[in-house]
Image 1 (cartoon, rainbow, N blue to C red):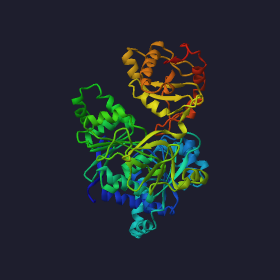
Image 2: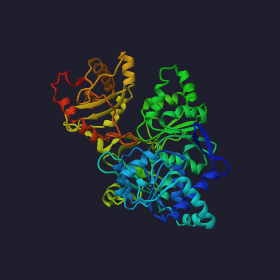
Image 3: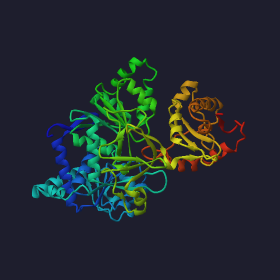
Length: 553
């Protein structure tokens, strides 16, 4: 691939390029430097930083040294990061600069195995750490010196790597309890990247605009490894808020994102004439877009149908960290809206008697790091038990209906899928977040976080209403309007599935408060615990009371 551009990245507001030859050379030098730091095969190297070219080089270099990459979400708190570094036994940690370095320094005394900290910017004192601190450039220089003396050093280390060699430990945030370290091998990652590429209709002529965090397996496999296998150019967006403006500059042919991004994009064109929607969407995304990929959470059907009608394929897939991640994918040649596509080549999917999706194939994890009990439970009978409930149709397309553990069983014995109801609710432009509650109860309730900009504009309210001490908004005009919209959304489901009462919250669910994971999955137990008084209040009201909660029936 040589001089062709591998990466585009912003420096001082201008996109620069890095060709494949230089990219490989930097990764080899980084690998050699890690070996010189006595990083042995199987040792763990943690990456605690936002997306960057350095992140990608560090990942490739770590893998070439036969070491194990441990990616940490940049948003983790110091104690959360300490747990993952300590539990994995990481001996080297990469931090981009002061923000993550400060978190790491606060817990460094609890990390006795740490041998070195590497940073992109030395904007903090070395005295923060007891171990040596190196810059990225210093390591690259050291690696060049090492390779001048031992030119086959990295090649020999790479020769020790096989398909069963451990490549990464990724800690799943989970919805309850401590995170589990998912062990994925080189064979897991490579098989998944190759299988996904084989049906995605992509080539080295495509250009991907990448912005999802590489600490998450979705972006890591699809945006990082798949593009490397195909030889595709990847442009790194400067940040979440610059995706659209960056798209106009680099003009991608492909974009990967989570459903919320596409929902917001669709809301920008939904009120236009149908004939203008596709043209406007293409202009927003740079004018060359061929296809879009959605994953990480369920894609609302109306969004997928809207993009399809506008002439832009929006292809939904499904996977888990434990499956590297892709299990099924709607390809350009075989797409069925409302499903997550067919299983990848080489991946088997079957539905258990209780509806759980079971998976078997070369993409399935080795197990959970230092957790044999959880491994045995997840891989019982030779199948990965996904914890998701779904259906396979006659043509092999998979539909996800809910999380097995999230199913609500009402006091009358009715099984209700809360995720389906939450998708209905958040499809309303006034509702940004929603969580449905009702396990063991006679009816369902919901905590609603409005899109305050939409609400205030529509109701011509100058300021957001103040909440009470429980964080609940009681303004009658606002809650009555939301109540009516919730009622409208509930007309498409059966009476036992309808949300009957709501509480309107002033603030969104937050990663900092452990209410959502870094990938924005609801942590129901934490939410219900924080708002237990609000929920208790909803069920304490008489049937016709409208004083504290808001009845929609």
